[in-house]
Amino acid sequence: MVKILFLGDVVGEPGRMAACRTTELYLERGDADFVVVNGENAAAGRGITPKLAIDLMRSGVAVITTGDHIWDQKEIIPYIATEPRLLRPLNYPAGTPGAGSIVLDTAHGPVAVMNVQCRTFMKTQLDNPFTAAAEEAARLRAETPVILVDVHGETTSEKIAMGRHLDGKASLVVGTHTHVQTADERVFPGGTAFLCDAGMCGPENSVLGRDCEAVVGQFVTGMPTKFPVARGPVIASGVLVEVDTETGRAKSVTRVAERYGAP
Image (cartoon, rainbow, N blue to C red):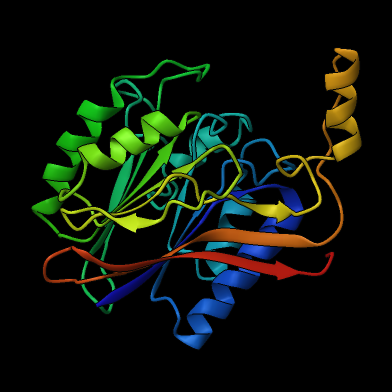
């Protein structure tokens, strides 16, 4: 049995603190054996830098997944080609820097992580995520039955459909991108654990991690404005899944929400 913790989108410095502290806490207590974090908003809420990726991995994060903001910090382009534990969506065209999946050896056996991006209401239209995910899951299962999939997408319907599409082919399918944790955790009939969205690591009193006044102001006035990362108490949201390492079937799935004072 392996216990995998997945934490949702990290938003700025407060989110990094919450993600690192939660990772360290769960590993130290033995509540998790393997930690994956979506870090695409780690750099002041836009993208991720090499230094921030290294900081997350130093805290114990095994793999960092991303999404549509992966290229927002230009220095990440040469770095991602050298760091296989930082993933970009699998369904980018051939020749794109980086990789969309990885298999890592652990004390509990090999664990695979895959990152895929949906297409509905997403600005960048990538290759078909359903075809790409199924083909990659089949390839990864030749190496290990324990497979985690981060589905980065806007709509609940597309993420749920991906979960059903991969039922029996992955151990966990978890959604990211909307920053709001859903309450639909379950284990599908084929043994795949699912949560439509893991939520975020970031300021709890916010609008998706951003300053409330700034976001509300734009909705009221319609005028463009900057959305600074909010301040105050933080939350680390995600999901914890127990997986049978022999079969890859999920035995349990539990939502996670760890709260901390303001950094």
